Length: 345
Picture 1: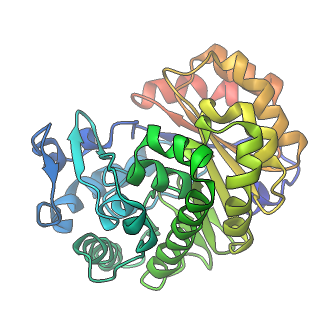
Picture 2: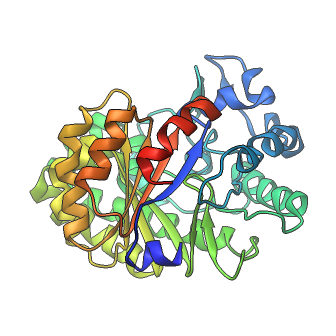
């Protein structure tokens, strides 16, 4: 991991195999029992009900002979904690949970803050503490996956309305974006008050990513709705601010935001780019030029997704192994063994 962050010379990428997919509710007995179409309430989330399945999932490390540390995070990636903390209803969908769009008034947006008495905030901290106690130092525990500043605006005002807002109510929208940014920073700092370091460093449990310094996972999924001009004007200052506060800052992106990748790369404080190879995204060959852009900008690159043997050949032929981490979703040990020689393992 030190060599990954430092872009040190490498014969091959950092490689991790996992059977954890894109649908976290399928991985836990307790979440599979939650009724689809209903809303999740804090009292339905019992940390102890997750622990047996968490132990099973962590044993992937005994199955796959790969390079990565394995750790945990509150509620895996199943629970959109920050959405709940900000008052959104959490709708249970097949395989996942999403915060419902609201139509919050501007008065509500002006009062936006992180309420430590909110039941979802308390449950988030409780879950993290339960994992730390259960781990007994055997594995790292991290923050959860949180929606980012533009996602907060989109969810609270509504995805369509938020785009109208940045055209017709730009000053109010900008103020709301900054409030969301400070909340995002505040909850990231707060959770790490309850988490011990592991091997002297920090950790992100969603991508099994250890870092030598304080880490933040920035997310701007709704950035795909912004033009390059609007991104640079409205969102880039927020992302630069967040990245500047954490020495091991990285950003999570989808293919939908690749048309503004050059604007993200202008933020020198972003040390790592995590890009999903989404199952319903463009062909991998169309993503390779974007992966190269990240590497040419001398940033670490973490690619997560499922890959056929030909996909691995393409990545190995096209990308520099320095500062490259492939987190590969597989169905089992046999698939991983098929890919290992192609990865020079």
